[in-house]
Length: 561
Ligand code: NOJ
Ligand code: CA
Image 1 (cartoon, helix red, strand yellow):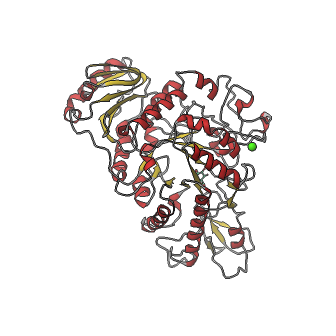
Image 2 (cartoon, rainbow, N blue to C red):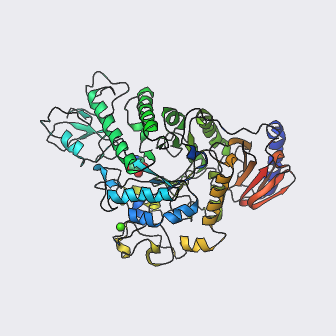
Image 3 (spheres, rainbow, N blue to C red):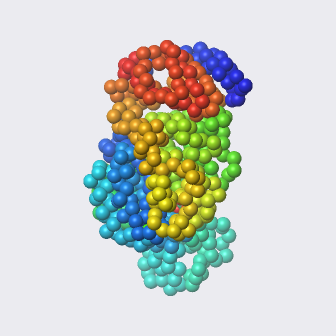
């Protein structure tokens, strides 16, 4: 089935056979209704699509080669033109930038390279004027070694005040503990890189033989929890609309889930009272844990759950990361993705939302592994019509390429590949900056045909317009939004296409995607009477659906069947 000299013939036969075998499933009249939420979730999330901005690579206004907050403000009309509801900003705080800002030195001060706190406030206000919310990054699990809290923790004769970090004796033998810089004699626990000491929120199940493992109720841990709440309060007061929490599952150590859940429930309860419309988004990648713990949205990416890898399989530091459903060679298996996704979706759909992002600053962009613009249209046709809240990583809307082997800047390692400057126009430096090319945060894509916003605005067939259309469609039809019902209609092992139903509003939608470069076809009884909304490379004849290489189709169907 995967590859064939006569893909159309062999696929057709096998699709028809599969269709006969599963006629009961196909004929099912039960289009799921709109999901009813069991707890308060900000109303704007019902149709939300978000846009992630990596500040250093978005738009530079002072010619130093690094993007800044004034640059983001200058581009807000563009962001608005996409139709997105919110921006997630990667860390903008004062930092030595060992990990691109995920090593915070001062949580309450904007890094001078990005501007000032007043610029941040202006950004929130200008975004709000345009109906766009701004979610900031909360690096809650660790600080920089240069944070005053850590410097204080390293002193030998510390005054009697809370210790924010976890120290074991100098002779302890555990790879996650790093020898302190002195004068304090001991090793501190790191959270990610060695220069990112873990903040001490406590241990779910402390080992009595290790006195440095404290319960979350320990006064030191309570002090950390309150200090981070104070950071959240500070930014909410400046006007932000919520937080994307970095490594949200890392805060409590050695836990069976209970203490971590209690911690996030506590923050959630407080946040929803303090600013009810604010949103909590987690980098956890296990929605069935993150959402019940208190998050409104969890990214299903490359960590705990394999679901995203089975769909997109982004490249991290591995060479061969193919064989996902979006592989152009058609070697993926949508049933493997659904086996992971559906249980997570069912467990969380009445509490919050799963996000399947186009990409982010930690893994390869979708324009990679042989995927070109027509392939991205297929990928986005699915990502932007699935339940939950989609996130679009800056530049993915114009099809910026993943730049394998790009410089390891500020702890990027392989992640430089997806952090290159935004491509605004065909002008010098793609309109990103007036600095000389060697001063740019990262080199631009050198391809003379690299895509840019200005060209795509002029081209009605561009990926940019397609993305805008998908966002507009999602906003217009509740069935396609975060709360619309979801039901796979045609999903066969190692077989393309994937066809599913979104339902619950006045109209239902049937979406078919074939990311593979082989043509295929199948029977979909629900196509009976359906009307085409958008498609490329797909044809119907009654209930028969023929899909060419890299094709998609969106149909409207009757709401009651
Ligand atoms: C996840 C962030 O997305 C990543 O960029 C960072 O390096 C680590 N957490 C550590 O904060
Ligand atoms: Ca700048």
